[in-house]
Length: 399
Ligand SMILES: *Cc1c(COP(=O)(O)O)cnc(C)c1O
Image (cartoon, rainbow, N blue to C red):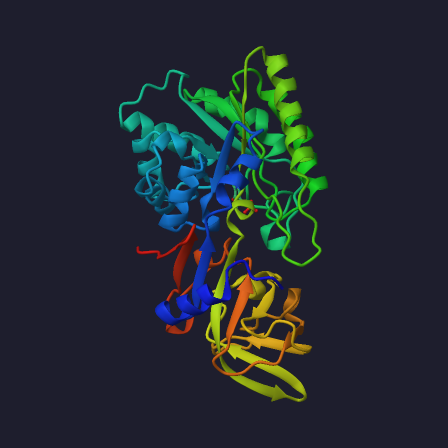
């Protein structure tokens, strides 16, 4: 497994900053944003990686951000985004987000009907005229969804996300009755899905857009663009994906008689790679004939294998090319599920790895999305530090 950073750099970073340590490369970001250039707005779903350095690089690459909490909005503003370059997307307003969103006047994407009157009421309290000129986006659940795990399937009858598609007309009526207008429509059916499901959203969004009518100014394809985690996994055909969406936009624009902005909302696609989580091997033991490698990073640092049975490539610095054998890799936590080599449901999924020793550096690959942003302090572990690598420079991210 090819590491995305030179070994001497990884060794130096581990030595200087200790482990576990997230290392995130920024150099590919402008190209990844540019690859989505057929979309009018690339709106980065910042929950994938909300570190200040990464957000700054996203802003410099020309993308905007999607925020799902007051905390994310605050981070986005601190990273230099203007309120109009943010968007608050959620299925509820908690008591922090509602006043903040109204105060900023940032775009809002409403995923539940109750949010309509709450938002209008908060605006009215602040003296904003509810004369039908202020727009909102509605997030629709099209009745189907798909993701790399059922936990990140965000559409269909079992999903809490979005306004159920058969309630669209009623929701539009409520928005207008509240003195607002529906100017955007959005669907996001899941994370790490596939081309077939991504494309089925086009048709669902187009038919919903026709029901709302020409008050629409913006349509959003949502995110969910997959990245290859295993060697041999295919790359998404961005050309075909972009074409399907620009065709949908252009068709609706022709019908409505005015231009529409097309947004895309990737998280993982922009953040997942190049990145690694560096850890140090602290114990190596044999359990009934199976080698177990225990490292100082656990699911407190990277929870995706534990939560989703997600696969992350694993390599050991300085051991490339050595003979391999099935090996389990686990962390330091007092919890039997603290294992990186597991499949969905917790089944052991040993990985072919070279033999290694205490003190070796073990890399978990492609950890830039939903890695650090999902870290916890379980077992009173510290949240890992993060280093960003840009050009020849590596900087520790300071909060
Ligand atoms: C999480 C999320 C995304 C990003 O999903 P990815 O799979 O990382 O692209 C986009 N939009 C919304 C509303 C989300 O909740």
